Image (cartoon, rainbow, N blue to C red; front, side, top):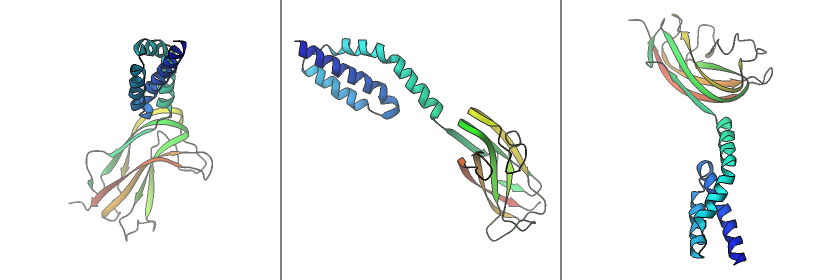
Length: 197
């Protein structure tokens, strides 16, 4: 009898723990299997799960809080449309949640294939001045710690820029030091720039 109670307690504890882990780790099947085993040997499984579940509920809350703060969420888009005339402004919208040391938002804009910008390069940068005050490589971003941030910034298309299909990379960077700016998340977008009608 004592062995059955001990076995029942252990199965109940395992079932409850697997139930707690089922949300982030998809282990719900283990709970069902343990429950079936407990029922088959005649253990009062509901009572055991209730007792152990109450005891482990704070662990469940703590585990989910840790997962929430470690999870990165990133959304980025071009506002309103994907075709622009020279002289218009392209707006970028970003929503980010996650941990950063000195983070910032930026967009790399690549010229159409086979074409160059007036300065001879094939790309430029357009950063969010709310999160990065200037383009100097030693300037850290303004996003520190756990960040929940939405931002919108614009790029006025110069009149002398070539027309065609531009590739844009809307990004979240983290500034860890001079020459060390890893891309945390990015989204690729395509826009078409045409001449003024």
